[in-house]
Amino acid sequence: MVLVDRAKIFVRGGDGGSGSASFLREKFVTKGGPDGGDGGRGGDVILRVQPSLTSLIPFQYAVHFKAEPGQAGSKRNCTGKSGKQVIVDVPPGTVVFDDETGEQLADMTQPGQEFLASRGGRGGLGNTHFKSSTHRSPRIAELGEPATERWLRLELRMIADIGLVGLPNAGKSTMLTAATAARPKIADYPFTTLEPNLGVVEIGGKWGTTFVLADIPGLIEGAADGAGLGHSFLRHVQRTKVLIHVLDAAGGLEGRDPLEDFATINAELELYDEKMRAKPMLVALNKVDLAEARENLPRLREALSGRFPQIFEVSSATGEGVAEMMVAANRALQEVVQLEKEAAAKAPPAEAKVYTIGNVSERAWEATRRSAHHFVIAGVGIERFTKMTNFGNAESIQRFQRVLKSSGIAAELHRLGISDGDTVHIDNIQLTWGEPDPELPSSVRMTRRQRTLARTGGVSDDDIVPELEDDFDSR
Image (cartoon, rainbow, N blue to C red; front, side):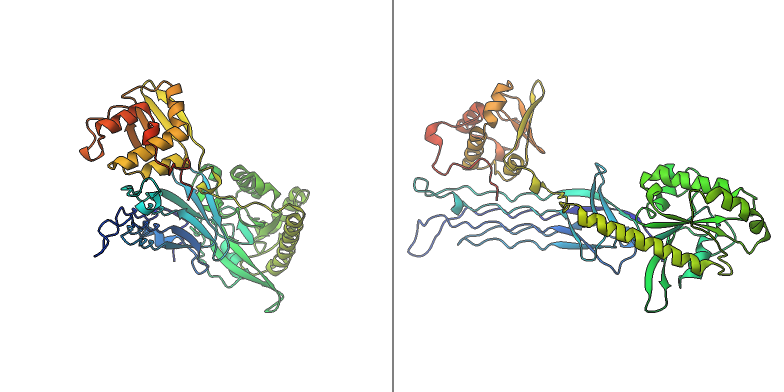
């Protein structure tokens, strides 16, 4: 199976259902009170780690993932049905990025781990919520909240304990075959391996310990800058705890200097990620079954032993020295694991980063003047409130104006110098301050009284009904 380690997907939660504005009507109740139910919540799109997956290849065929919308509320205080969520399975080691900003959103490594990729919209309130002792027949109901949507970039970084690195044709695939039951493609030419391969190494037989060994395809000079398939390969090295640098001690068919090859690969690793320098590295002087390699061994050992004490003379083809090197690699791995456990025990509990709006104040807002006649209001609460306001309903418009006044937004806009006809942007909604835009559809145009309210940015005391909104609905 071909390893697909990059993908781009579109996720969108379900829109919330709109609330209902209805009134009780029965045989002997001709003018009952409001009984409009709330809209149902839209479904979420959730990414979940599925251990049985090893590639992102399913996303070559399915790119768009959309959850069900919530149903609208109905009479008799019936709440609309919530939309079903969509679960998207991803392999362990998947890193999630916002495709537009490039921000890393999640690093999914544990089986069953979940990430909320797109939240469904909230259901709108029905008119029963707006009844009061002085306003017994409210004809106002909220629209459902539109769901969030975005493009995500997925990158698979294979989870392996120890990685084999080196130039093309250094013998990494043959070594993986000698140490594990894996059977990667092997041939006597560079770039035989075009995708990482994994194998399980057993130390001490069936009841001993095991670790996962990865054959990282051959790197070349300039890999850190993307030369060849550099970035595609290097990302898989990041998760390994220990590296084995496989060096062709014979110099290859081209008669290269092994020391130059060694320096080239190490430089590319450190250019890509400075943390690579801190990883324990074992050096495998490979192909010692060849006379050219045996001639180079004294020079190579003398040059490398200072910084890299764990140097092994091996032959992937014959298996010579491979088992002893794997034992040493496992010992280095256990030391790293122990150090990580000790560091984790001493460190204070890490707070999980939340990549949602949950850690942002719902009541916070900011008004700015972008140009002579354009103003922007930003804030989680006011943006959601605006989207859920039905501007085709007079009472909804009055409610919106009360919120602008009670929250201080209207006063701030006046301070910034807003005038009739200026445009106010709230998320992707554009409103005109004062007289409405003549190009707006008639369903959202205001009456003369409503235009006066919009022009003043507030309402008179006679217009304010007792159920004043508490800034923004933080349900």
